[in-house]
Length: 305
Image: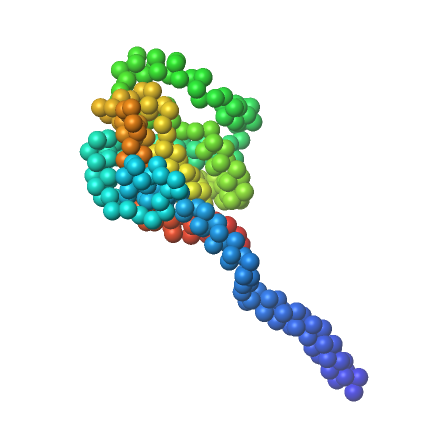
């Protein structure tokens, strides 16, 4: 009797000890399955922020669709006018926007691709490789962010003239093939997102550093690379100061070409806004096409475990 009651008591004890765990597991699963819904105030705030973000683009379209006299009125118009396509055609012809957009596409695309590749390589080296002077070299790279770019305009222009690149696109591309901000951004991302165990496993399997970079680092760094590409492309597309110094109106980028619309004694604000709208449309199109992939890549990189 004693030997038969022990398993029964043990079984009852085991069953009673499992019930709280089962209830807790069900509660956790129920809480994990719940969807958090935003309140009305959150939707109101999001709507206000969306309107404030869209309003500059809407005002650009309104100003580009009217004439200069109506734009200068007080109060200004808030509804689109009938001259949008006419002003766009004038801006396209007077500023040579076709060639300017091709030049900007080449410059921004090459700079964004090279920045992403070089910054990812350097970020991987600073984050996961051990070599002498790593910290000092990283501090030197970060220190270059404190130097105003205007201080290097004169020697950089002299260098481009010596190379025979003055008034040519390589003079805009080569000085900005990589940025310290991109290196620091990728270093910080890979330090958190790339486990040391993956790198060590690649070493154990006999892979060299470039093989590890190609097979392990690039898939992990893809979300950050997409974000860095987008930011760098937009910055290079909108860059005005250095292209204005080293290029002329015969071979301009979009920001340089827009200065031609503001020349003269009386500025045609509607024409300038039409040119600005033309220069903005490629960026909007790129974000519409690739925005979902970039956001999904960011969310995929944010989920761990």
